[in-house]
Every structure is written in structure tokens, then in C-alpha cells.
Length: 134
Image (cartoon, rainbow, N blue to C red):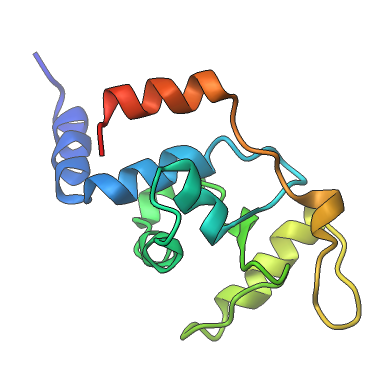
């Protein structure tokens, strides 16, 4: 028999779109001190032109998942934090990344050659695509 908490979790995950749940799953793989771009997450999921959809998924990240999904590790392709629409989140994102050892230059850019995550192992991507065919 399921507990009420488990039932709530199952119900909330059913309301979250599948693409968003997949984004959260990929972002959880990004190690501390590394970053990934919105486009890179989209490409891993097999939708290389869905970078904005990745941003939307992270913007709509349920509060209960803020600690489980390291949203701060997703940045734009220029190596900067995106400042779209939210006044406080970019500052918080920079604080969290600096606490992980990510360095910024004077213009707020990260050296992607140094801090970009290479991505998950091919086997993980293959398993994900078999589990959730797109």
C-alpha cells in the first residue's frame, strides 16, 4: 500500500511534462564544478533545437526538486548565466556556481573549455532513449 507522501509524489510527477522530467534527469547527472549548456541538454535528449524548452523546464522546476536538480549548472552557449525574466535567480546561480569552484571572468563568462561537462556515457543515453522513446 502506498503512503500518502508517495501518492503525492506520483501525482506531481504525472503533472510534470515528460520532457521536463527528462531534462531534470539529465541535469542531475552534471557533476559539481561542471556546467552544461541548454543546447547541450537538448541534444543529449535527442532534440538539438530545443534549448529554449530546456530553459522553460528549468524555470518551471518544482520547488520540491530545487535541491535534487542542480539547475544552477545549466548556462547559455556563450558561457554566461542567462538573465531572462528573473531578477534574483542569476545572482543566486552565480553564488552557487562559485561555491562549487566555477570561476567567472570580469564580464561574467566562464571558460567552457575548462568547466563544460562532456556529457553522460553513451550507454546511459541509449538506455534513456529506450526507456522514453522520443
